[in-house]
Amino acid sequence: MSSYNAAPLAKLAEQFERLPGIGNKTAQRLAYYVLKMPRERAVEFSQAIMSAHDSIHYCKECCNLTDKEKCSVCENSRRDHSTICVVEDPRDVMAVERTQEYNGVYHVLHGAMSPLNGIGPEQLTIKELLARIQNSKVNEVIMATNPTIEGETTSMYISKLLKPLGIKVTRLAYGIPVGGDLEYADEVTLLRALEGRSEM
View 1 (cartoon, one colour):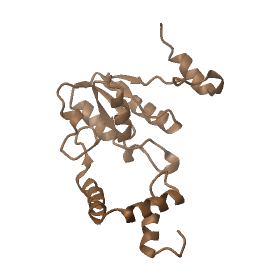
View 2 (cartoon, rainbow, N blue to C red):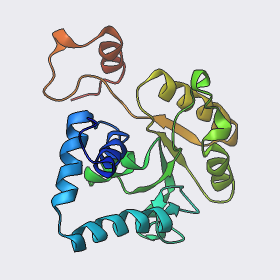
View 3 (cartoon, rainbow, N blue to C red):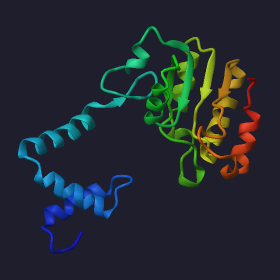
View 4 (cartoon, rainbow, N blue to C red):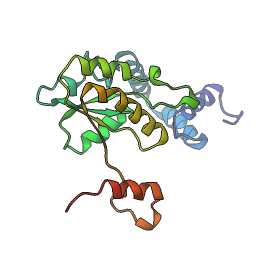
């Protein structure tokens, strides 16, 4: 931020700029917006950040974020606890929940394997997933990692660990998005769409 701005304002803008997807101009706008807030709202805003930071932790069962011992999905006895959907990020849980069709439970890995970035199985919650499966009756594990090289690698790695346990391991189908045009789809996407075709 320009040197003609007050140092605390520049520092505030710098903090906003550290957030993903926030550029310099947006960071400045946010900093000025926060300054215009009434003091009570600014205090409320900062307290909400600190409260979330202090009280949110991993669910002891699925590793999703929660402020209780277990998240609301794991505590829900009406959910099908024999089916686990494995996702990379807590935001992926929200995406699947928005469909209002899935009735199983989740397991959040908090990332994907990426040897180039120093992320191996030890940095993910794979060990917790295996312990959970061995301690309960699980019939199916749905691999819902992202369709990236890292996501595929993670999915294959977990699948190889689960196969000897006699658990059905499935992968989310993916291919042409609704509203998409075939001419703009890459070869891999088209191949996946063909492989995942279903009868009408």
